[in-house]
Length: 257
Image 1: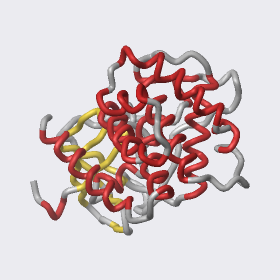
Image 2: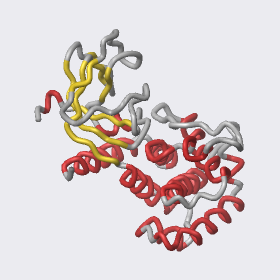
Image 3: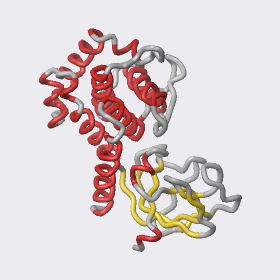
């Protein structure tokens, strides 16, 4: 494995165009123009950079070849080969919880919420959600995250970040109850997105009739949002810390496959 040709890439269950993800060791070739962000086969040198463009939680270590073009945090080439892959859904949600835990001293979370961030006992979920909902209503979280004219305090950012991280866990357990839950997480992600340049939600909730399982932001978007929120509540340098933390987490995960 050459360090000069070491890249990372996220996909969902399929590629963005709906085609199948190639098998490990199989070169995928693009026959059209090679233009960064527009056309070709993309990847990033650092796992955290790859996360910024992740449409899903499947993480790959890849090689590129043929007419390679580079930008600051992504590259594009004519061909791409997957060397190793892992579903990072659980790890991404764990990463989001760790970021939320780092912000706990900004808002004094209820003990059951703090305990969940520390050890994630699934049987605590119902009581954790009740506590979060009470906090959310008391602090008007559900409205202020949607109000672009409202200046968020560090405490509000910390509460919203914790809600996003824990609700992401709830959805992964298939314990969702209403689209309002999904809308809350989506609103948090979109509010963070409007404040930063490194975020994106992987889906949108268009109406109360939206298909919940296809439209909630997903683990990559929540992980991105929690890091951006931490940078707002603490300082911009926080992103550098989480960049390195995520790089270690992701590369170690691939080594276990």
